[in-house]
Image (cartoon, rainbow, N blue to C red):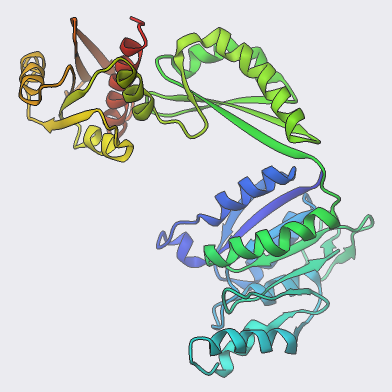
Length: 403
């Protein structure tokens, strides 16, 4: 199974001016192709540092994918950096220049001399035309690599077994995604004889901490295929099951065997899979009982309202906000319920103190009322999210008939 590394290029990313979404897209796409991703990094617009990063990646990986730095300006360094890393010069590609001019002409403009840079590629590269933008891509096959223990880009040798590739894609996400799907995927499938796939299943849990989950399924985390890993969030822990197989059906079978064991051990702590969210699952559970709901929050900076607005549960009547003192949540939650005419109501209040953060919860059901008091010892900026998730999980369990 081939391996890959991703190098995202752009000083604007390092400065926090834009968010890198390309890496996430490529990571998921490579996973689906059965390519192991070893590392992802971001490098600023510096030819030498990019070249060194590419050489370093080639010491470990079969495929190096770069994104960004293929524009027409002098600070777009990827073409020169890849050529330097591969030990070749750059060359002008007339065919690419005709394509660049054709794209620019669609906008009623004439290309300037600086845009000729976009038709320059490392010598011997496979040019990839870009019908949705002006930055063509390219692939350099079996590039030169540093000799062991060398730090001099001049000390290079041809990789004995061959087969490596540097793939340089535009940084604009829409262009990058189009070229990857339409040009890079067919190339990778043919060049690396890709037959395996990697498939991932996420099980979302709430109500159990990461340490407790590890105690229950720890030996599963030592498996090699599928692999099992944990990712903790505020009030939610994801169990990730990843399988490698030669078919989707086989991957599904491997995942299902492990998922069955995880569900048996974690019980009703598992609330959803993959794209499920706690807010949607909780309100769907309430809807299945015929409950419409009202909600009240205090001290959460609007976190509950934002979460429910994103989920847009049809059975939510209102979300109100109030500045409450400890002990006032029950009465105020009853008032919100009465004003809205809801069958059920959920109240969440966060009180920050010097030594601790206290969360009060109040749940009114058609035939019962419940209260909870919790303390949170994590980072203060995470406490609103944690409080909301604890409250939503409590609602879910109540709607599912659990305590």
